[in-house]
Image 1 (cartoon, rainbow, N blue to C red):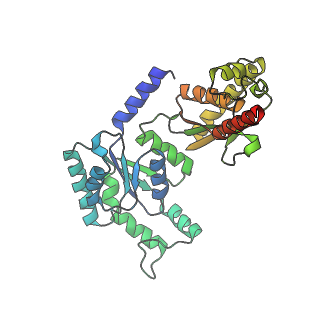
Image 2 (image 1 turned 90 degrees about the vertical axis):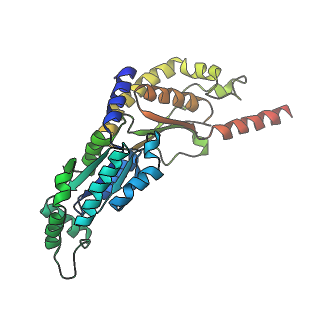
Image 3 (image 1 turned 45 degrees about the horizontal axis):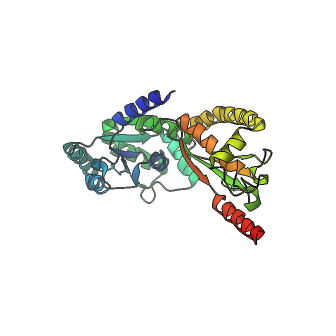
Length: 316
């Protein structure tokens, strides 16, 4: 998809995403996992908030200030009083020109019983001596009106967490699929240790090293002269073609899997020349594909300082 197409898609998504999402549903149906997904989508999230406080919270965090932030809250709607609070809340939000959608998560009684059995947890509304099965049926009755009012009902009985995330992102995110994956591209130097946080790591120490040219030794991969030296080399051109093709195959797979964050590390000996230039080119390629990319250079400042010290020592 081209840049114009991505912008149109993003604008379309933004126009239909609500300002406030109220999450409720059966205990054990995945409300906590859903809230975590909304956090990854950039929502301001609060767990277990009384419905009457939602308008105040929306005002407090500036939902209606044009900052583009959305709010997601989980609410207990098991009593008629709390359900009435929600209907009043939706009305108040509408009076302030804020849109609100109710998300209801559900699962079959059999699945809910199995989940409580596997987790060895008591049902939150079970009274002493009451079976989990009876508590689930009682809760289902208490939530009947909330389920009927919901804008979206998701049955998680046969749904993996990754599938739930995908469903929520499709319904409630203003970002494109590529933008939902938070990509961190960074350079590093092997001499200063391998990064433990990397999901993908590429070693570019096989490329010609500008360090051995005295005129480029104190420069970095951010300098145009070094970048031309690294990127203009025949070996680099062949490598970049293969490397970017690999990313073009792998990245959509990470998106489809529902991965929220991906770290890509590019390493050379000192983290000053080759890895910096390749990391810059990698980040630029991914940004052009519509991914949300953070670019950093882990060891660059230390490498530059060391090069300056070596140069000073040589002059001395």
